[in-house]
Image (cartoon, rainbow, N blue to C red; front, side, top):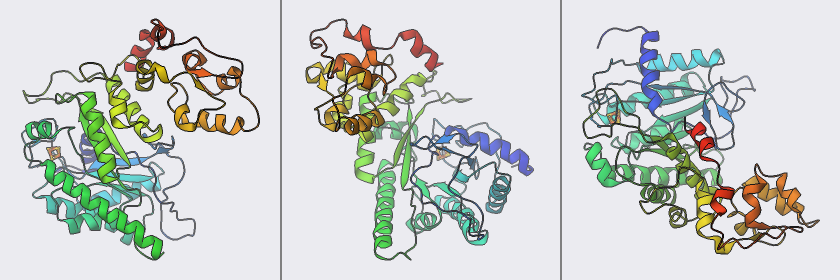
Length: 414
Ligand code: SF4
């Protein structure tokens, strides 16, 4: 590997990290240095472009320790057979970069991933050393997210969790056969085993902290994962089922979906084109349906078409409502929260406001209009004090009335 200065390494290793979408942070412990001890903070606004579910912007230095790798995953630009320029940071270089960026107020934390250098254990040791040194040598109190290597010694993963706020292990692809085809050196069994171990350690850490406040924190922001969409033949129904299983089995804080992006010198078994970005967006919306709107995975999957794909021209909650019209209209003055959550166009904040307001008065359509982006979209699905819609179960033109115009969606897809 050619000798490169830090700036040149940073250019290569920050660019190589851009394919990882799973760096948004959320749910971490509040920690700051206002008491004059240490530096850094997990709180406050930042300059970066990772967003927490609550909309807070988190600034992270997002880099790889190295983009060299002994594995040859077909979809990865850093794979062994890829013809890219390679670089590698030492653990100390990453520590110094993080501190320098933090002091200049460029970042609030670090997201560190890596290709596999000579073995999973050696690579993991280096990543743990970065986190350890930041915390113990420099009293860094900012956010740290480490990408964990599933084949690494569990003791190393445990050490990582004692320093990092969040750990993640990429599931990579939605199905086992997709993984076997595109990342033959990886094993779905080993990935699931590592995720299970992580869940156990996170749960034990929470339990210990409940009993003893002095117990060490273990990955207080939990674990997350990422899957690539569109590199294999998995349809949206399979992706939704896979994500649901990851939430249920491993208590994931987030599953991230990353639309496959064609890479230079791509393997011949990969598709030539990336999937529409709107597909990734629809999958995130389906994810929200499961996490915040009470839909089961099978219900979300019912919004897909005959080929198992979510429609691109409308959000999956609306697609689901158009398929199951007989449960509508829902009376906003009487219906339980669970029924309100099913109404397309009503978000969780609007529903909370409706539940509060209706305790003191009967709500009219104009009250709902103030809480939604488009009352035209919501109106056919609800009853208000002054509004009863026509029956919608037989309405053939309802989709044209409530679905967004195709031209608008193309703007978002660009
Ligand atoms: S192990 Fe990670 S870095 Fe290495 S080729 Fe596979 S996806 Fe890329």
